[in-house]
Each structure stands twice: as C-alpha cells, then as structure tokens.
Length: 316
Image 1 (cartoon, one colour):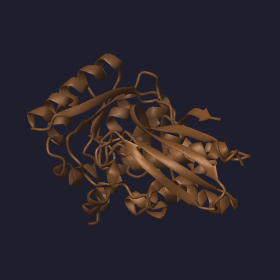
Image 2: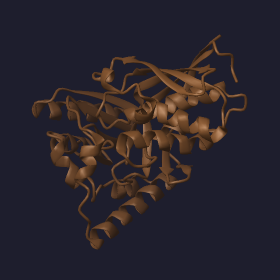
Image 3: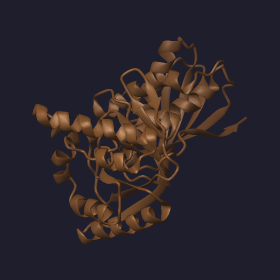
C-alpha cells in the first residue's frame, strides 16, 4: 500500500458510446473534456467520496454516498475482490457535462480506478480493472455495459463484451466530431424508449450494419464503414428526445460524414470524417444546425484513435 499521505490523480476522457451501430457494445474516446479523480489510501477499510467539484453544471448534485456514486461503487468492488485492508478517499473534478451522452459517469469511475490502481503494491493491468468499471457504471444506468468504460480504459475504439475488452483497429485518417447542444438527457430516460421489442427483420439488418462496420475498421475501408455506420434500432426511438438532432445529422452528412448518430444516449451527436479539414467543416455546420433549432452548441474535433485514461501527476 502507498503511504497514506500520497495522492495520485488520473484523468479519463469523454467518450462516444454505441458509435451508433454498436449499442452497448462499441465505444471510443475523443480529445475534449475529461473528469479527474484524486485518490489517496486511507487506513479505514472503506471508500469515501470527499469532494465533487469542477466546471460541469450540476456536479454538486452527484451523491457523495459511495454506493450511489460510480467511482465509489467501482473502488468498493476493487477492495472486495482484492481483500484490501485499507480504503480510499476520493475527490472528483467533473468537466464532462452531466446527462450529455459523453460518458461522464463512466469517466469518473475509470479515473478513480486508474488512480487507485496506481496506489496498489501490485497494480493490475487495464483489462483486470474492467469488471470493477462495469460495477461502477451500473450505478448510472442500472445495467452493466462497457461501451463507455472500455474505451476509456484502453483508448481508441473498443468492442466491449460482458467479460472482455477487445481493441479494434482504427485508421489514422479517421476523425470524429462531437457536438453537445444545451440540453440534458438522462440515460435511464433514454433507455425507457427501448423497452418494446424489435421485429426480427430489423434486427437482422442491424446485424449486417454492425458486421460491415467492424470489418471496415479492420480493413481501413471507408466505404464499408459508411455502409455500416447506421443505427437502425436505437436512433429512431431516441432521436425525438433530442430537438435539432435531425438537422445536425443532416449537416454532418451534407459535409461528407461517413455516418452520424447520437453519442451514447444523447443529446450529444457525433459524426465520423475521413480527414481533419472535413471534420472541422462538419463541426461548424453541426453547431449551426443546432443553433438554428434554438440550441447553442459546443463541438470538439479529435482523432478517433484518441488515448484513454492516464495518470496526470503524483503528489508525494
């Protein structure tokens, strides 16, 4: 165990869950906002969330109760599994907007795990942290899916199953745009619209898109990616929850995007482009589309193969 006075900080970036076609299975991170966790070891065999601060509106509403906090739940699971005698005290700095569809709950969880892991006498590899991240993320969505936490742990595009994180190849010419309008959409509300079953034909078509998309990544084939980057299941039901979505998506496609859809549960919208200049132009058009719908928006442009969570400093 590290000295009780030592604090280690880690930052986890925002992410795009689902990537449209990969509901609860695929995700990637992007260079933009991120959450920071500062963790120190304590002699008490417990997890304490001491402070939640940062620039994200509504951060003060996040529970300090560790069992109702994604970071707290993840670190408690880590303690139990490793049978640690010591505990952790955590401070969170929230930068990712709440209810944005950019993985804020997952980022806090992953940042805390990466920092706490660095305090262990024998730190685990990132793959071994995955089950604890899934446990933490379940606080926010009441389900266990890794499409946000997995890419935050590994970086780039990741296929997240119930038990494994599988990094996928990402061509270096792929860039993403993420646009966040001035809206909030809670994940649980967005999942409620998915309760009704889907017809088999629709599911089969969705599977064909997913297969083409993953194969397109592996081959670096833009046309296969374009053919697959279509959400035939989730987007049609969730789009009405995000005013201006149709305009923003149309703007992206008009500027040559390979595809565009909701980021996670929304309201953020993402699009993939084949170059940085194309992405920059698409970002402007997507912001203007939301503005025309009455919602001023922020945007970020990033390589799709962006890095995952990292340690940012250690204080002796």
